[in-house]
Image (cartoon, rainbow, N blue to C red; front, side, top):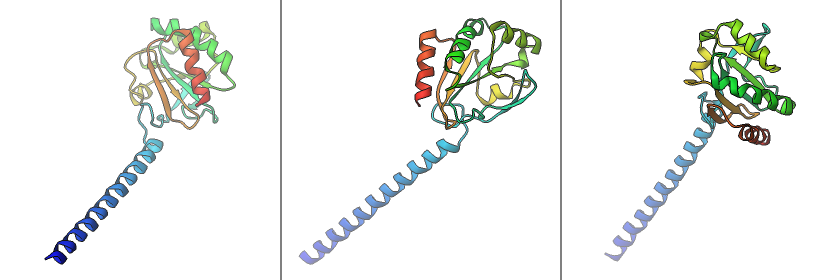
Length: 184
């Protein structure tokens, strides 16, 4: 009888050990798969790769939103009729002038609801020196799930979104986010 109990206990211990090992292995595989998805899955949210969209600029060139030449970058969605965008524009220009060697800015105009002439006048009035891209059919706004303007995505040099901001940031907070982006 004691032998039978010992065999049952040994079997139970072996069974528990195998189950524990398999559970740990499955958890490790799940985490590895999740980490891989975060590198390749394109979702417009923090921790995921920024959607790669190609848009025509005011200068007539085609730009890929992920073509920041190895630098971290900012994608700012705006419109000329947007009051908060008007408030934010001078701060973006100042930040670009100060950090342009370290950070790229793509200013994406919601052209589907904003005439190109108005977008061009807005960019000229504020002295935009960074690429101004035209979202003529609203696809970029839809892909990035932009529901309000301005909306800004901070993207690290690996193309991963590290922060998303809806609305205008005070200049000191905007600069802090630029510095944090450069360090990421």
